Image 1 (cartoon, helix red, strand yellow):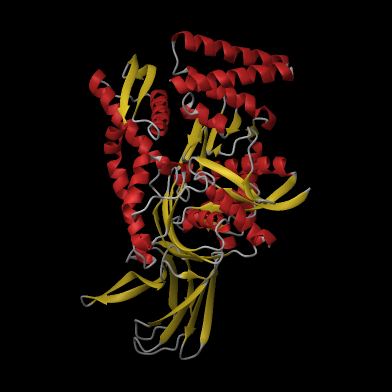
Image 2 (image 1 turned 30 degrees about the vertical axis):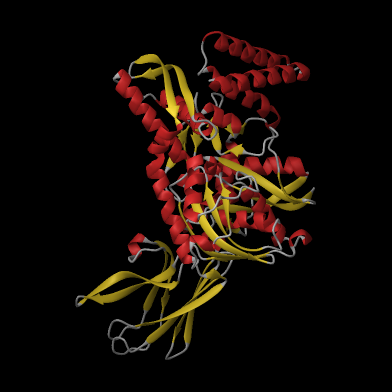
Length: 573
């Protein structure tokens, strides 16, 4: 097998893997033949791990054994408990990455051990570090993590090499929101400004619907929807309703035998798009600020933007499209699939990395997503205050870049200086993220303020930060290098995490189509009643019986019949 580098969009709701082909970047389908793999993990009653569509379908029937939207917890200590074990977000993400890796290897006939992986532009250092940890655990070497809007710009730029334009990429995914302003001139893509919100995404629109429906149910029936399974069913129904309201003015949410308080009742709610948009208004209000910041950092106004690119499944929501069109004064473009464009761009970056001739005319610059600086002490109201954040390399600086700032001793006889490096936008270091520290020794003793020290930050496209200090009177230098590899797990920790993952029992890849069909059917079965439920129950039983025969033709026939019936009933519920 030959070795190749792929591009991966590790998303909150869905993840994708792509490669560069003869006709440009293309999505690699998973074992079900689908482009999108749900970022979902479930452990069945036999202790087997399910990844993707089968896991997502089980969220409505087995919420206590299923995890989704864990990307929002990257870089935190939060865990999800599945089958008696606590999993960190990077461990769950590693399972998704490993599944994508297996799908790519099966499709390409090549060993995959390296990838370009995307993250939200506004991911901080802890979140990027957790993403690298997930890649390490999954057996993927990642030298380059790129921002999702940058990846989208690469995919778009490849199709518009000879255009001259200024564009805004508006990326609203399942759990994060990013805006990037860029310029394309003869194949050179220059990122000029970026902003975002890592706690804002399509899931928030669903949660708002869940709250609205829960309040209505409680008002009508005098009890809340508090049961875990009932809430999971309600969440899934609201997710479906959100998608339907992208095309329809109204839809019906039907949940037979939903547990409300201590009773099981048949719930049927009419959802009107305009009423739902009113419930979504607080979320829509949050979209405006990152757009304004990105434009300001780029030194641009809305009228300077020639094209607005929509990225992410949540940009299909009509009120989101209307808001973006209003803020920019132009209709957005959807020339590339919003769900796929980031993965396609990651594949373009992978091709750039290996020197693929197909992208030789494409060049991309990027910017520092956060301000980098050091902790200092300042005199305020006749008192010395420590822990003040002093920027050296500002957010939005085009990379690679080098910046220097001069500092002075603050105490008489001071011979040492602790250089603490931080990342963030707050005035106090305590509110920012610490990246590292080192000590400058050998400063000549003297009065406070006499000795001067230059501190230079040099930051490259791969995320390598070099901090160099120079005592000006002696020219003595000290250096700290903060590189992506240094932020990864050590080899022992990687091996330990990989051993833990190897102990898990994974559902056989070739059996996933059957398991996924059953899981999806079970979820729809829970929402049906009467003749439809009976009909679906028979179809489920036929597939289970066919599986026991181990006869491929019977299994295929029963599975296809079940999929067709499930799809038909899901559309009607």
